[in-house]
Image (cartoon, rainbow, N blue to C red):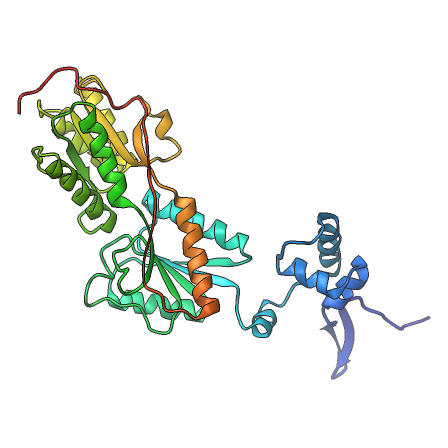
Length: 362
């Protein structure tokens, strides 16, 4: 009886140690093994395993089938050492509950994947210097090439907060363009366009449902609202504030419904505008005949509100693309550029805004 045993790559073959039968794992399949089975070059296998474009889809499927048959797994650590990079971008964010942050994160991940990079997310619960330092330390352990920080809260403008030196960083949604490379939506332009639209319709003034005080975006939108009213010579109502949620918009809406002179409201985001619409409806204030409402973000559901919401469109995809392009440029050029790149906004007019039905004495 022939007792010779031949094991294929990735299988276990028997051997004896101290009189006992043990199993030894045979050498795993190599890139050359995959290339031979698929009938392609090792370079083609490398391009498929690294996710590069330019490989014929039929060829790609042949290579993937060969990888699966042989149990081949690319050695990411070896590839990283060879290339001098991990092809991974770290993302630090302090709030995953807001629509803006989530859509920015989605856009970053999509853009990074298009460039052949993965994304490692590190949420940080408390925005402090120690937490920031710890986050960068953990990302270093996770082997990332560079970092995008979504700093929606006031943080980098505080003297006690700084990002570690010698780390390639791009910041989204921050007021730190004098110290870092920042990508942001044109908060000022978008908010002023919203207020100007309501004034042009004939409203004597515009109330503002602002976001939380610690938010950079909320501050920018509130400052722009106030500036537009002041420049137009209109009275500036007291700011009412929510926390970005529809629930907070509803609570504030119940209060605003009691203000007889409130004929127009600019909400700092669409979610708060949604709660505001509900509260006004429950209190018998018609939209837009009695009160015009405008939001900010242009979330996918904004056109399905009742009535469809007039809002300021943010191009989150472009913010994400510019963040990824910026951090890759810094990685490759080792540049140290500062300043803020603003992504334009667009006013989207729907059915929630109209001329006031009746003139209201100031």
